[in-house]
Image (cartoon, rainbow, N blue to C red; front, side):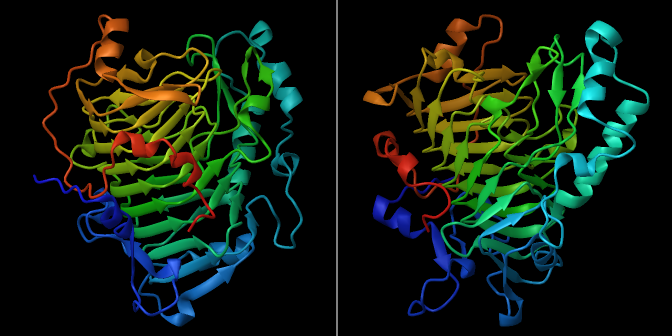
Length: 429
């Protein structure tokens, strides 16, 4: 397959295509994904709600308005104004975690009951665990919102925020999400799994955005963060971080033809999962995703972790810090990752050998990538596979992948990526 590489000026022009007259005022709600811009442009292309009739172009500022506006499969443009807080009652009253609790659940009671020193290392069971799960269901009913097909959701200004929401792009086609800050989607009722990781872990529900069984999706110029509830400030219980967050943007269960571009992903442990099960062989031939011109800022892992899919990762800027950091690119079962011209800004003594991790994969094609140290100095070209293999005997990765990305009009030289963090995220369109 022939790969298109255009001059920078032409590449920028291809980032988005207005669906209206060239003489009309710019309307990002009417813009569509340009031909050739990543996997999302393949197939039928991604146009979202650009064809919406005037009566289906709405501005929303509350959860109930938002929920109603994004439903249905007719073409529609939903403009978010200000902050839409999913943890808010219809009358505007904030909903606290305690308000979701049912059947006598309290965190204090749960911790006392299932402390390994008291309960042991068996899975929690009984009335308090059932109450935790029931309380979680109550919260899910409130904060989960499903987006219909042929939808564009866009920030109406520079300060549009979707807070606390689990936005589901499930079993639909042709969805665009742009110019939005997705913030602090938190689980009030994480569950304790004593067998997770050997020393136990707290597991939570709710990604900021979950793309599942969906086709032709464009996620562009958004910010994903923890808002006023940063993971670094969460307490420890049973010797492990009481993790209330799941993923920032997971793409799973046979989703296909997705472009993720110009986003800012900020300080999350488990950031982006692509494919959610080694045993889901029906994902073969799907999960085709492009990640380009994103800032992966202080992420712990999964940037992304890949199973099965043909995944092009190019011109991204990784700011890699200590603390939660485990790896950036996870090479999973039957994955086909092509990583090129990315910058890895390594802090806190982290080495190039830590950027990759083998989760049961065979090969990764990488070239043109470079590292820098602590945000300073010159970029240095690096062979990520060579560095990883030298440090991980017995878990080596090959470089024999034969897939060549087709939809890549704007691959820039790696040195052009150095200033990317100033150009990504919500509020810059």
